[in-house]
View 1 (cartoon, rainbow, N blue to C red):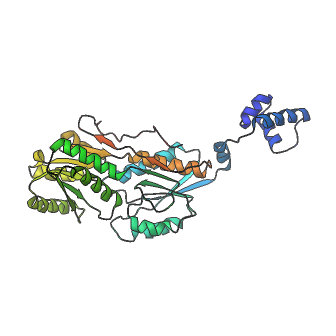
View 2 (spheres, rainbow, N blue to C red):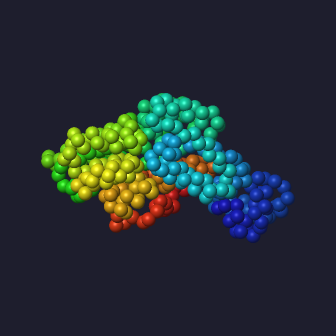
View 3 (cartoon, rainbow, N blue to C red):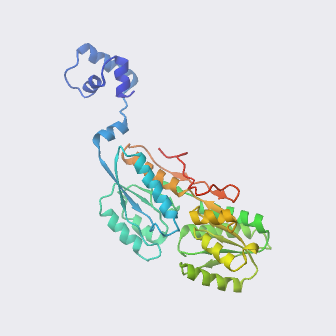
Length: 349
């Protein structure tokens, strides 16, 4: 029973019960005996939320994510979920310490990680997109509870991982592509050569497509992440492989490939499947120049990561394991204009 429930059962005020629990004077002996009998029979379970509000301890959450303009709004959407959680938890004193890193710059993760730890954070939300650098970083933060978002990562000991299975995502993309175009030559166009998620999505895509002996998958890793660099890379790719029937983009830059295919007049013969429900991709999907988008609910990830740390640090609740992010498939027929598909359903609390 809570303090308020004991007070109601005893017919006294919560203040009277509080004095008995903490063995303070000012309570009549018979009243004290009655309250103690109720506590003995039912037990007393303090409300952790009320206790934390009373203490008003500051929770400093570090946010170590790629720069928000990387990923064509994807990381911005994830961070918006973190901000939404902080807003919902406004009675608590939560401060965000954000140190974005350049995922394309070697060593930047380690530099930003050191900076954020020095700020005295209580917990950390991070996406281990660069496995090699994160392996080194995680060895130094055993005393800080952290939550993984976006990327599943075996080393380390997060209190919770909120991630989508990238291999299965790639498999879904392969199934969609085969339904659209049947047997043939396909391309997985991607950037960020060291990104674990992208490698796994390619592997799932290729494994599914090549179950058919009449099909094959070309892995095309573009070193230049600018639009001009992507266009030039695609020019060379189509010259080498003019028979391509479909392109899978396992990240948010699908709309750039879409624009290229339209300008070259080849979209009608090449199917396009990509990741991430950013606004540009939604628009292309509605126009028909992207055939399917795979969503991974970034806002949902950010919100639940924040709630997990709040539950663990403020409410002292056990938080372990993995929260699996569904693999959402969006087509022209089931898209809702300008939607972020943000929902509190299934929120970790």
